[in-house]
Amino acid sequence: MLLSLSFDALDSAGIGQPTLAERIERGLGIEPAERRIILGPMEILLAADGRLETLEMRTNPSLWRPGPLLPVPADAAPAAIDFMVDYDENGIASHDLAIAIAYDAARRELSLRFGDFAASRWRMVADGMAVGTTLDDYLGEFRLSGACLPGRLGR
Image (cartoon, rainbow, N blue to C red; front, side, top):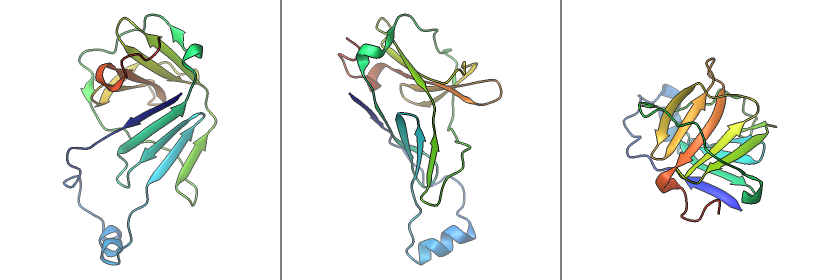
């Protein structure tokens, strides 16, 4: 199965002022490059301004761990996330990282947990998507819920 999410921004035009280099490149017709982050079986595409564009992962739902998940706090603040990775000359960052997937059928939530990191802080980055980080801001988990999941997912 290919798990694929697309993210749409309401308005990114007003975010920050362009740098001199960005203005020169725009004047020369040079488009900013998208970047890719590969985390084990997951691929994340970021827009030139760092916003999430797509997230894709090949997975087998029969390998997901079913059962209850600890809830994401209802007061999780909205936020943008910034990945602190080193990109190669092609704009790709790659990290060999195990991802454990769990599914809570009762709440219709899917947990994508990275390595052995446990999420301590939660932020909402999109409707139906929370990001959990460790206390020292390492990526711990993506939590997908509700409308961003297809109706028969995990069954």
